[in-house]
Image (spheres, rainbow, N blue to C red):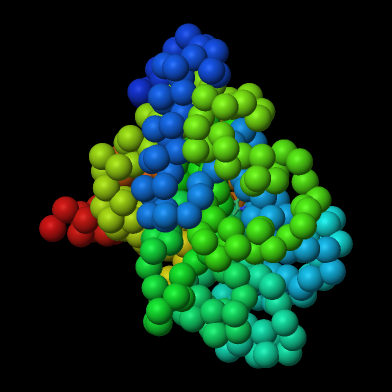
Length: 389
Ligand SMILES: *Cc1c(COP(=O)(O)O)cnc(C)c1O
């Protein structure tokens, strides 16, 4: 790999050479038939990863643009949104909704825990909510939400299910045709960014709307958006030779290759691999006395938020790791300084993660915390080997 460092933060994630190569191709006109063909292909690939017959949108912007597209096209000013939040990125929907005059209510879990389906059920019984946002994997806490458990509850109350898949898409099941415990109990919108589990550099948002979500847009006379109004994009998605706003040409090349890699691995295999990687990282770090804030029952497969043992300085630890060539992330809000975050998603390999686990052990040893690196390595290997049997 061309990368000089292992970028093991919760996104952007390591970029493989074939994606860099795609990006480095000559910039064609966005209306050149050769480019139009590639753009159209990424739209088809996006439809395939979400398995939807609704509309998909591949637009320049980060994941947050996807969040905004989901909200402004479905919930009108004055209508109610329930935000189910398991951390910092869940909370982002609060400000987002409020920015558009939407009435936002929130269910927040303690960091490291899940909001229960019972709490969601109770809250939805108290009033009419147009939509509920759930964060598939919250990047601040490494906690996932189980769509099997929450989608039926939300659907019982008739609200739209909006899934933030920014740290999940292609690493967790987001099949939009899947019915969860009953006919019609499907996810309505999934949104994501290019730079996390998909493994492409940042800059593209991918968003999918099913028919119910499109119906919600159709029922709105106007939306408080221009770039994010899906009605400006639908003609382009149907015929990418049409112009609304210039697509990120070179990133579209990269996305085509990134999604080709995803489909070549296969979604099921990729989902299983992420589960195994998540467990392997957490179990091997536990050998060092380092605990994830999320228990294994609720932990996300894509990243982990790991508490430091007593007396380990966050700044010094991560600087020493960076010196060894591995970039880790600090933690947010009240966990800042107390925990670090490690991404194990996208095109990250088992070799990279095993190396990181060893380097973490070496760093702890250098800092005066004696830990057993070979034991951690064995635990790592055992978890990952289960993948191949
Ligand atoms: C990273 C992230 C976002 C924000 O995405 P940007 O690309 O930074 O705008 C939103 N939600 C989740 C779950 C994320 O991990």
